[in-house]
Length: 159
Image 1 (cartoon, rainbow, N blue to C red):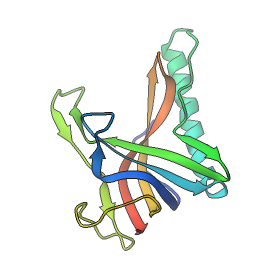
Image 2 (cartoon, helix red, strand yellow; image 1 turned 180 degrees about the vertical axis):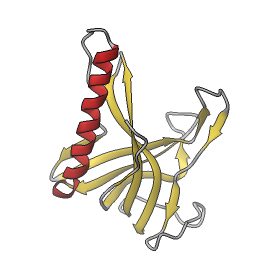
Image 3 (spheres, rainbow, N blue to C red; image 1 turned 45 degrees about the vertical axis):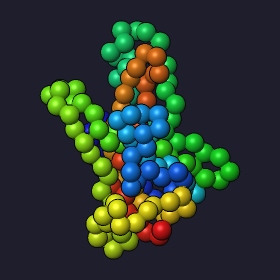
Image 4 (spheres, rainbow, N blue to C red; image 1 turned 60 degrees about the vertical axis):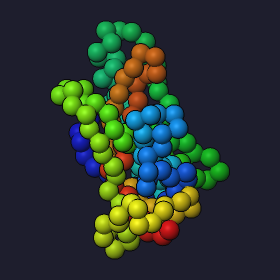
C-alpha cells in the first residue's frame, strides 16, 4: 500500500489521547483517538479500508505459500448508526531498519488550520475532529492480516 494520506469525515472524539501519550498499556506511549462518524458519511472511508484489508490479505496469501491466512480485527466498528474508527500513533520507539530511537506526536490544528500547541488546550471526548491518517498493512501469523489507521494530524473544529 502506498503512503497516501487520507482525511476523515468530521466526527466526534471518544477517549482522545492527543495532548499526552497514553502509557497505561504501553510504556513507550501511544497517541490515539476513536472517532465516531454517522454511518452514512463514513461509508467512503469504510470502502477504502476494506479494499486495503483485501490487499493485505492477498499479499499475506502470496507470501504465505498456501497457508490459511487469518483476518485481523478491523480498525472500525459499526453500531447504532455510527461507525467508530480507531486511530493511533506510537509516541516513542526504535526504528527497525536504522535501530535509532524516535519520538513523534500528531500535528494539531484549529478550525482555521493554525497550529495548536498541545499544552495550550486539552482535547476531550465530544470534541469535533477531522483526522489525517495513513493506512499501514500488516501480517502476523498470530493476529492475521489487516490494516491499522496511523495518525498523522488532527484538526480540532470544536472543543
